[in-house]
Length: 344
Image (cartoon, rainbow, N blue to C red; front, side, top):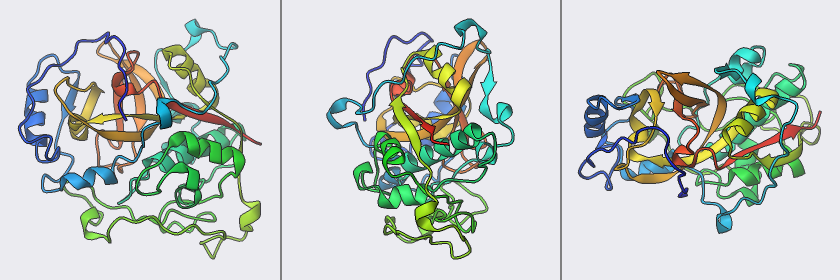
């Protein structure tokens, strides 16, 4: 998934490429950490997030967004939001603070040993939006599991998918409720166990689990404690669309309706993000596509950013979150944003 980048407004960090990076970005992380942290012009800090012994093949378990078919989204462009004045948008915004009662907004997801970011990001954003649209009457979780297992048009489950097709699936079929692994919440909780992608932590190592696979699609509730029938549990969206790639259009969308799903290109230095406002170095190499949940924006030390929740658990990055430079389509971040309006 390669994106065309528009003119960069902030300084570009030009770094020397660490040797053997193309072979394995995890092994080269140490050199990137030193180079980035010693660069006085860098807007972010790097650190050791992943075990250097991880194989290159592990990238596919983290990055699960497929390239757009024919290079173009099939979703219509969302209608402009005209009832919010551009000048009245706040300089800093965090959806977690505006909609405090929505518990899903406060949570960092863990996609586990599975390239399901496209499904986790979509289900998570839909969950937040449904809570917001119902003013908290719905305050549970929608199932990334059913989406990942059953949406045949979406792609290949744990082996990658299309965020656009996920939102179309919400419109056509909807999805049932479902919480995290072992949560006993909802109809189809997530079946992939949280695991430690990183150097150390409280969870089992992802590499110690069974090889990556996509669970079989089930047309019944897998949680025996859940009493609502499968066919009556589905929630839908009444419209789906791609959000205009302009900065203010994205801000208005989040401010009015809640988080959106963003897909972007990941470069080798991103794996080492710890804090600050990320922008990829011109010498880092493209690794694949990833989907995340965009929840806000702000400015740090004069640099504008988007505030984003990742799905690599809270041990990665800045407690599971990251900031990425805003306004110049960094890594294609602003060009592939999808959303929908819940049917309530």
